Length: 68
Image (cartoon, rainbow, N blue to C red):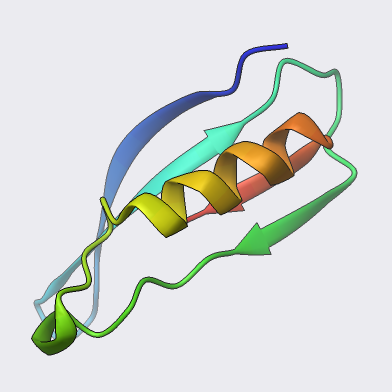
């Protein structure tokens, strides 16, 4: 089962934007939802950090919907 993902951008009331990657497994309904936060940007973190992707892939293989 391959995890699929796509990016979405949420507009906040403050006028700023929040970009997230949504990872979902090819299952009829997720077992739950997980929010995976990346390391702080000043310490080399980003939403494309390899640890974030590894965690999201593992959770989607278990049937969870992930927001990163």
